Image (cartoon, rainbow, N blue to C red; front, side, top):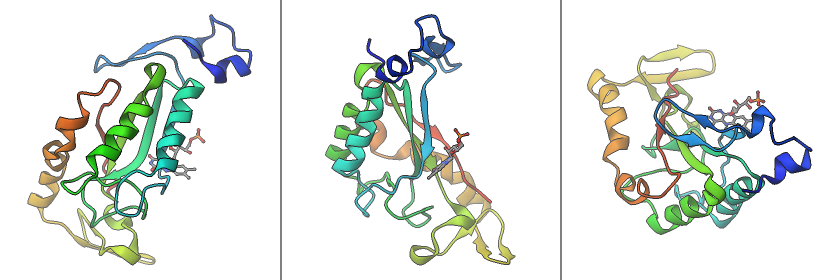
Length: 181
Ligand SMILES: Cc1cc2nc3c(=O)[nH]c(=O)nc-3n(C[C@H](O)[C@H](O)[C@H](O)COP(=O)(O)O)c2cc1C
């Protein structure tokens, strides 16, 4: 297994960064290198990956990272943290997502989306922010969601069609992150 990043830093074979890590969920990461979630805005503006984004995640995998986490993947296009991030839903381009998911997991790398809902921090030019509570602070306003809407959010991701088409790819796992404020 090649790990160009570790090689380039002359990190020896017994170094802790090279050791695999078993997570409580059973996933085994091949080393300790993880690309943390970053809202990259490299999508096509309609919630689907572009070739530039696919190539970026492929390069992280080629570099030897055990895990790359895509930042702020939305399940509801109405509450985006930023334009240009991925949105999972019935409208998703399944082929583009499959290409991303397959090219980013070479050499045993994992690719995980950080599932998000930006709540009060939803990008103002393209949304009307809503969070668990209404807020009216200097520079931060939002309306409130109902209890039912809040409780329905985690299930919304589980119901998406992508769960069938992408879960079966090796290295493709789903995590949740609710950016409520
Ligand atoms: C441009 C940029 C975008 C980021 N986007 C996200 C994000 O979408 N989700 C998240 O949880 N953290 C995000 N972060 C935080 C990073 O994942 C990371 O936690 C932070 O940069 C601290 O890491 P460090 O201590 O290695 O510098 C972002 C950071 C940067 C610089």
